[in-house]
Length: 173
View 1 (cartoon, rainbow, N blue to C red):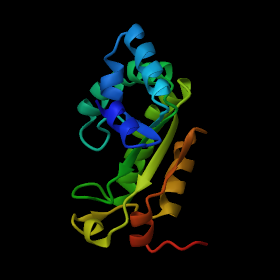
View 2 (cartoon, rainbow, N blue to C red):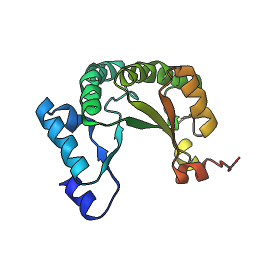
View 3 (cartoon, rainbow, N blue to C red):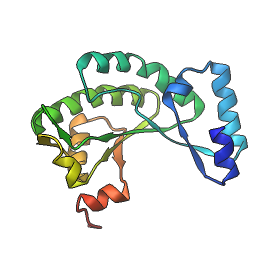
């Protein structure tokens, strides 16, 4: 239905759902890829299907399924995945949060790279959100680039949303 609506209203791409595509058989993935192409569409980015922001058990549980989902996305022709970084935390200081993000997202990035997927991180800029919890966290392009560098996997990139770019006080420079 989503693919039909995207084509009907002349969208250029359609979002890729890692959970849905990851649950399809090889034959179903090949058919889905064909339908997307027949409708003149390409895949947009998929959202990261791993809860990396909460406890270790949930992270490990979701991470264990990432290989299967990444392989399915690759077979479907999807080439990009992304997630956003929440700019605050109630318990983790900036440094603790940075280390946790780097460690967990590095594990994700390695799996995604093995399946030809680029991995983008989006910063969230509004100050009102940043100060909504005890410890502010990264919220600028420079900080996300530092996180990507710390992760150290060469499939990493940025997702730049114009609203977050503006609210973070970014400039064209």
